[in-house]
Length: 144
Image 1 (tube, rainbow, N blue to C red):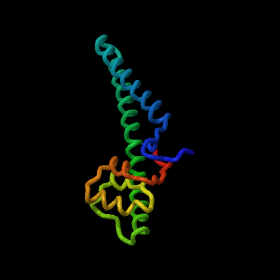
Image 2: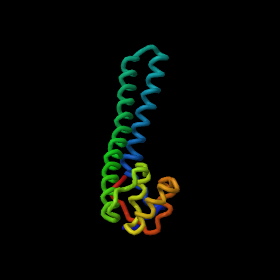
Image 3: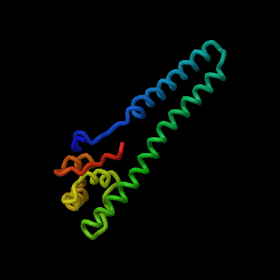
């Protein structure tokens, strides 16, 4: 497996991110077109509304599935990074760090984590800036 770094750390699941998103969007667009045609002809409006309701339901499920998975992953990452920071320093991680900063810090090597976490607080580093500042990348191959 290729060494993970700033340029290649983002991952996509083709079935979810491309295919399912495309199908969901096409279903929504198709149901809107069908509703427009039905309203113009004055027939099958109830069916068209049912299709639209189904398409909206699919879109909501598509978006919520992703949000729930990310929230669960975020909780796990925060717990792991808090424990890792405590093991490395004997101190709790700074409460001023934001969720996104902690998530970005997960890529920092053990040697870099304490100083980079401190910099993130004092300099107000954005998550992307934290990732760019990492010299020795610690791979996270489990998150999508």
